[in-house]
Length: 72
Image 1 (tube, one colour):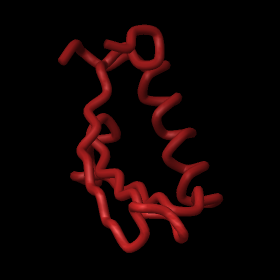
Image 2 (cartoon, rainbow, N blue to C red; image 1 turned 135 degrees about the vertical axis):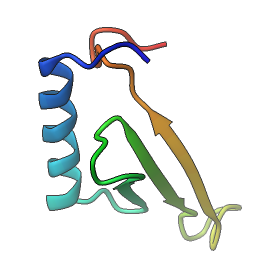
Image 3 (tube, rainbow, N blue to C red; image 1 turned 180 degrees about the vertical axis):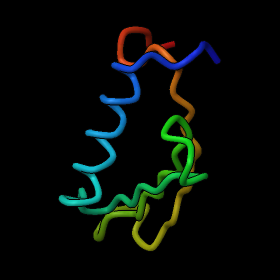
């Protein structure tokens, strides 16, 4: 991972804060390590009345140090 830029830290902090204050239904987002804004755990809950109802899907997301300028 490239060295984090201040704009990346600021962008991720704002995005994370927004998701904590106004969660998106069916999703939960938390940091894997409270000291690292660049690694998130995202849980997706299967929506009702779909094939995925009752499902729980968890992924880890790692952002680059120059987020959101470069997305691979």
